[in-house]
Length: 124
Image 1 (spheres, rainbow, N blue to C red):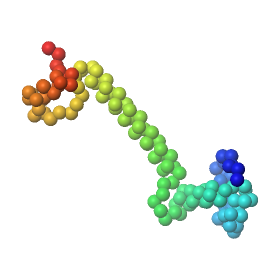
Image 2: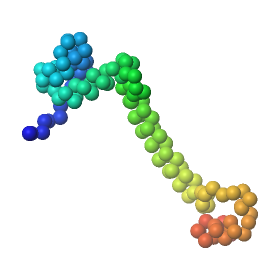
Image 3: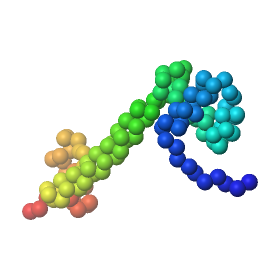
Image 4: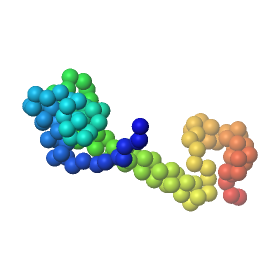
């Protein structure tokens, strides 16, 4: 069986197809055949419409929530990259390692030795 070319559909077309399934009294397979769709695609559209209308008993995300979640994930990724850049810039500007250290160790011989060993010693 030949693989079907991926097509895109407008929101209006999807809404009309969902309406035919819900209100038309026709089965999903009949509507899918009439509109030249796969049953899987039509089933997903119906499921998504139910979630968006708040009719789904599951805790599924609405389309608006999914869009917001995607945007928030992109923002988090960008902020993490910016933080890494700033951490590297801070290290370069101070000439010191940017590592978290216990304040009790700051003046200890062990801390001074570790700074020298990894190349983060103070300039004399």
